[in-house]
Length: 106
Image (cartoon, rainbow, N blue to C red; front, side, top):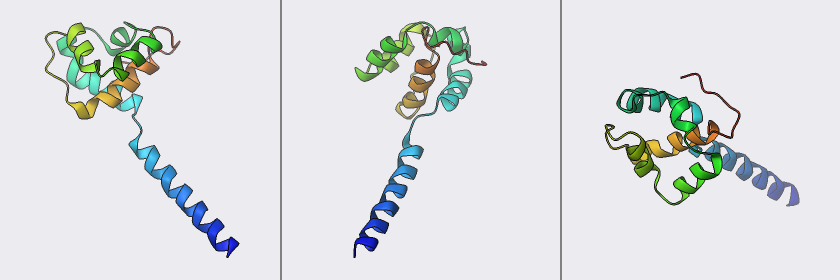
């Protein structure tokens, strides 16, 4: 009985970890999205965009639901960003923020 319960818990934990991994945002995908959808309209690369704020500032902007507004503020010529792209763009901006010490290759 205990062995069966232990196996069930292990299988459930393993399944949950796979689900959580696929649901997470991806900085690499965000970088590609920026290059493809925003770079031309913004007039500068993703590194410059990410460096406009610190990680704490990007976190606050995102958690307040203002990321799309901030993108539009920084890039007025850009089309509205689809909501499905915001998580990845946020992850990219956060990972390459001015205080992150990281430099993207775009």
